[in-house]
Image 1 (cartoon, rainbow, N blue to C red):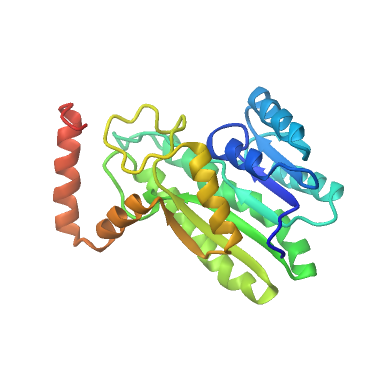
Image 2: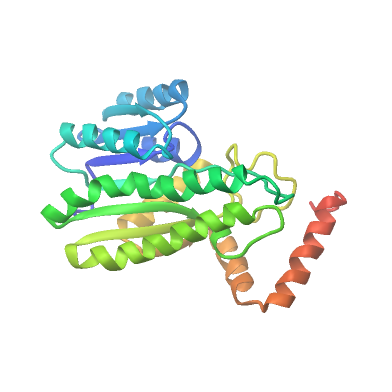
Length: 260
């Protein structure tokens, strides 16, 4: 695939990182397939992208619905000669502090993990036939270690990382690049109610710029921004007992309202 992406399919495109990525790539000569659950917000993003000169095809739906996503992917592929780039960005974050409600991990997994699978699979056959293409999953630092209230979220992102790693090894011989991009904290609906220090907090536009740079360089795995990469690299190598003490101490401060 050339360094210039002309036909791009993005999920979770109506808000946050997805909206910022859509507008980042929008320009004359580019065709965008944008999928999201929020119809009104999606049309607002689509209008902005069209104003920048892009051809835009909008699809309203839930990435948890495999058949619907497949139909959307098929329709977009019918409008363009080939799809250069697919960005599986849609995701949710739900608290599961009590670990009693099975519907929470089920819903998180079907959106955050299976939604990535549903988004990517419909494009693989055509990419294989032409021997090129780029598949991207927007993951999270949550994939690296669990925290008390986000076990299900962390599990879903860990699943994304492992699945895309296997996919990357499978598709590399076919000339298809697979990138897993683990985001830190971004100023979106998912973080607005978090009441603790979020190192390296980014705007959606800043996150989109970093993601686009990683895509352009065809990076295999990226954790960003740099502050988060340093901290979570440390978390990953900490022995279990030491990590437990640190995280539970931090949670205690948050619960007491002492964490700025």
